Length: 531
Ligand code: NAP
Image 1 (cartoon, rainbow, N blue to C red):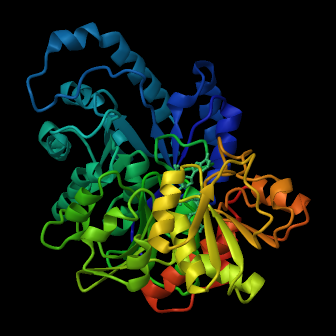
Image 2: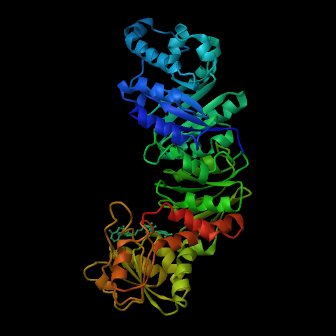
């Protein structure tokens, strides 16, 4: 457990919609942030009236993010009064708006953008006792990236008292593009913890999601959440439901064991849902977090290796996905035999500072196949594709003594792979390939995946009508075009979800030495899949 707050941000153009959102946020939030800047101009008075009538039991936070700032953030330095005067009307407009909002007694927190700090330094712009009754957040946002002088911004806010400005909480939010961009902001959190300051550190963007999940456990004052998926008020924001149910953010603490998926992209991954469901089932103090990693070498150096790391997190293991499954190998202290033969690692366990690599794709792939077909010895199997997943399939099929033929659009790649595994190979040209001599046809290409490839299939019903089984590794959507083709030809099918769960169960066992709860893991994944 930690003491951090979960703040649900609501943003609507009309007063009616806004109050509906506040009511819906009530069950999820400790604090509800009302983004007054989202409202149409003529809706403000009506919104204030409606909010004053609400029977909210949660703390309310008022925020107004201006489209442009009234002045650059430069307090602590010489203030150019001429600049201030020229922009005075914009400043007045903001103050008028705030005065209206401040008339609402229900508001507990106020979020002032950094430029207002200058106004506060120059004069008493609001009545003092109005501010005394509220918690004041001063916030700095940078939507371009992490500036070199981020620490100075924190120091400036920290010295608010010297300028006679009330600042109870500091919020610093910067855009990040790679997981290593988040380090500076995390270091500020550690500094704030030591200095006993309230900080809300936010690394925006996909790469910063982990800071939103782990922040509260490491002393962040608050983390922000979206009310609905697709309605995020900042990039990388996670829904309140996911933060509470999937990541259990308020239950985490500094001792929580951290697992995660390393890849790029990782936003589509179901692994956080699957593994967190298993941690929850076993009531473990552990969490599984997405890490969007572009530069793997830097991630290992700055986050993992004891001697060089800049961030202290209690990492215990990883899932590794595209494009790092091969590149991770050089960072490992030990690689198990299966992973070495496949040439790819999808699972890393960290124990006593050492990194151990495994591949559970092969086991995850073959389990559902054996459950459906039983003995695979001497069955003729066509594997479509010659990428990382195909390698795991070929390895596992050969271990089971099946006879494998690799079909790839790039015949050279097919040949190289076939030579390595001593398998047969052929050209995957949908109009000419014929699978009538095969018992099992496996799609190990991304064709059929949700998005641009969804309506595609590597083979048609006519081409596989004589097969005994069609197995698609693609798991989203649940029923792919390839599976529909097979079904329409009367061929039994296995979808990719079975492998996804099976390989995740093997990972869970490696990490925790506990039995993985299949039902809970499958249910968590199914809830997020397209039908
Ligand atoms: P990968 O390493 O990128 O390999 C993809 C393979 O598909 C390559 O051989 C590629 O050919 C081929 N390919 C791509 N587009 C194609 C097209 N339009 N026509 C024909 N072939 C095409 O990816 P991977 O890791 O092997 O993954 C492949 C699929 O399996 C993905 O959809 C992934 O989500 C799925 N998968 C599922 C699970 C599971 O648990 N269910 C596990 C792992 C992977 P080129 O080399 O010529 O580009």
